[in-house]
Length: 149
Image 1: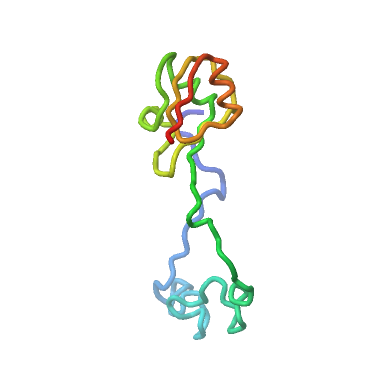
Image 2: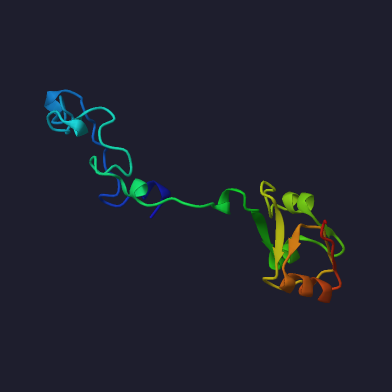
């Protein structure tokens, strides 16, 4: 078999249905939508959650109290294993260096280092949060943790 012999599998490529292209096409005039009615109109159908005029479930359920999700602090998470693979001995781990190495985007409220994986390099960590397991492994490898106050 050569490159010029390659073909898609039988039935893998299907021609799209061309609607409203004259009555001879078989899909002319009403374009397969039947005659009249809500679903035949442009933009036909209903919005998500519409229950035919019955009070929708989202409006039937009680909504009370305060939800902190809007104000919660969201951290970008980085594991020690990824840091160990991308950083050299003696480097500082902070927002800028993590961005450069492609480990975070830097668009959240801060960075948290988790202790998944092993750390074999002596690094200085200047991030918002470090888990207890990660801090233990960093100190064991001879590194230090500096958290802003």
